[in-house]
Amino acid sequence: MPFEIVRNDITNMQVDAIVNAASRHPRINAGVNSAIHKKAGPSLLKARKEIGYIEPGTAAITSAFDLNAEYVIHAATPIWADGQQDEMALLRQSYDICLDLAVKYNCDSIAFPLLASGNHGFPKSKALQVAIAAFSEFLMAHEMQIYLVVFNKDSVQLSEKLVHNVASYIDENYIAAYELETYGGPFAQSRRARQPSGQVLKECLPAPCASAPVPSVSRSLDEILREKEAGFTETLLSLIKKSGKKNSHIYKKANLSKQHFSKIINDPDYRPTKATALALAIALELDLDATRDLIGRAGYALTNSSTFDLIIRYFIEHKQFNVIEINIALYEFDQSLLGA
Image (cartoon, rainbow, N blue to C red; front, side, top):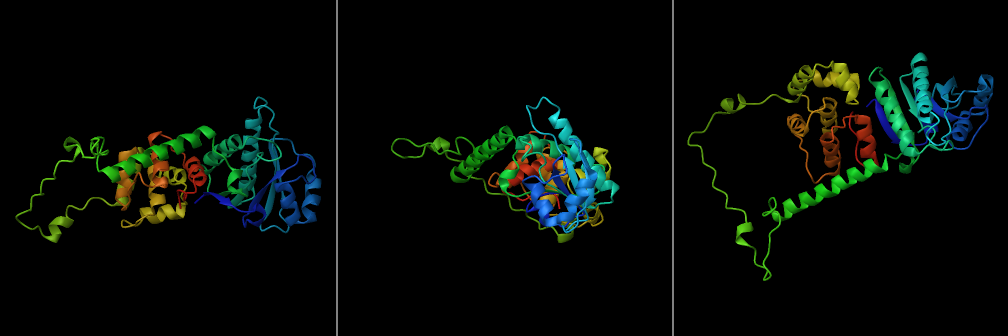
């Protein structure tokens, strides 16, 4: 998938370019900067000194020396003051320049730390907001593998409000699913009201099911197969055509590679993973019913008993269709990510 969040030491990433959270002056600071210089060797500091001062909100590029990369892109990010000093705009500019340099130097892959969230004091949720916006816009126009590399789970944080809202949504729907499974129906049937004696109220019991009629004539297999509905690929292509969007817009928005998308549309019987099917539904900005219909054609469903499914439902119901943001939320709750 073009965007991935990975838990790793960024100095171990095997990519074309590693982004360094650099000091404005040619010196080694603590944190990511120190780790990168240590593994790259003393030649990196020498190359960095040749560049000299880097203006906040900009970046410069050098060889990566002993790192598992071709280049190091040194991003000088702003220091957080109070949010009123253009800090967010300058940080976004840092990301954009790093990505532009990667394009200029023909990089196919790049690894970022969460810039400015360490020594420069950005609130992690705001630093993440800028990164999501920069990556989302860039990947709609370019083919590149972007990694957001975090050392531990606490290194990235969604806004507290969003985390709270998603967690509350999960809790509420888990309870509803539990009651439905335990008590067998909505409201009167979902909670078996009991008298003080413990007797179940008769009016709250579900009515007996009527027996299904048995067909008098058996149909042939050919007749049944002629009623077969369109498969996943045929339905997907129809939805893309209806949306008026180009194929490239959809697969990029879905966090899919061009190669993977080509496999899907060129094979009428292709069965995607659930994560891929949902990513495409979200890229098409389908509502919940249309999403269920599309993924159902690949044999999947959305349930109230899965944290993964409930997170997806939350974003669809709230009309939030940024797959990168959804993947950060999935990561926050220890779930697998959308895309492929």
